[in-house]
Image (cartoon, rainbow, N blue to C red; front, side, top):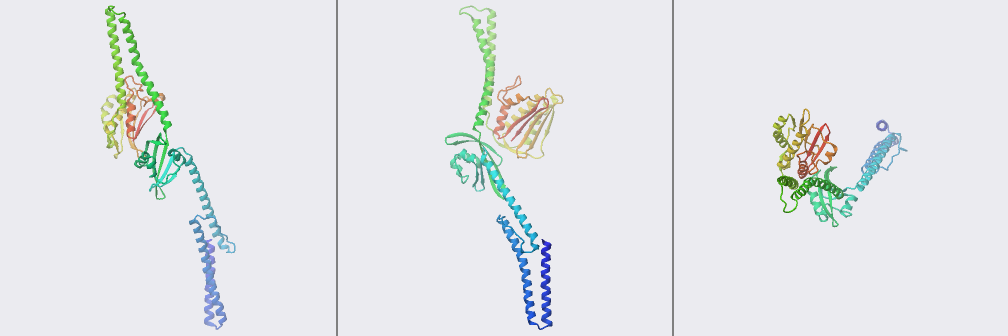
Length: 444
């Protein structure tokens, strides 16, 4: 097209120059005024032809660009009656317009698809801009709040002040549990906030999920597990006590009967046994009270690297005595965060002790401590051992209070550790394979 356009311009300019030269010659060499007049008209027409040809192309290009600017891709260009040189230009215009038209149709289809997905997910979604203006409020959110529309996030303050306060305080990536009072009905909801920029505009996406039924099911299952363990422990103490008191009653026999020396010895032994079992039951009750009375964290700025380094120093001598290789992988930079150093040290000490016991019967025992920052900006601490591992059944129960596989264990260490990490808005997980070892992962 450019080649043809240049050729056409060259021809027109050449004709224009020839006509000008001819006009100069006729004017200077002859006195034919009619010829001079006719040549002057031809020069003007040639100049107008060049101007029109260039201007026509500019107008077509301007029309095409205006169509792109205003998303008008229905316009078509034809080279009919405009010369062969315009054919490639118009074909290119039509091809580009058709491509943009397809892109626009695909964009509208994707928008409709995403809109359908957003409207049909069970999680309530709100999207607001920097001024708090709501651009998205899906069907699940309308149902959850019993409100068909909200113009601004500020409107949520009157409707549900507790939820509004939590959202205002939350940072990107954070997740909170909130109690909502909707139509005099109390529900538990999980709230998650993500912030992002789109075409130089700030947006906050708020996801709210009603987890009331899931929490109720989990709570019921937890209570059932706890009751089974409590019942088991209490029955282990009460059953022998009942049996021994019945035996004492039999030994006492009828009132006024004189007891033999052997019967007195048996009664004393039975009373001692009852006392011992009662003390055991009392210790169990004290253990339960410890589990339910963890002090609230005293948050202060601390460093995860220093925390793990100090704890590893405490265990170096013990590890050396037991022949356990201790490997500590620490980053070269500090990893600051807000936490209670005493409570977190308690968690790490408990986990490292468990790892030490797990390695007791392993050849070439080794414990590894890793500290690093995850790509989601959370701090991760790992305690890895190459011990005997944990079977699937035990793995499911490992954080249940009073569940233990140790003869002298109380079964509350891991449960307390999980509570402490939850108080720090973190998570503690475990992965294990029999014969391979166990990995406890804390992320805060």
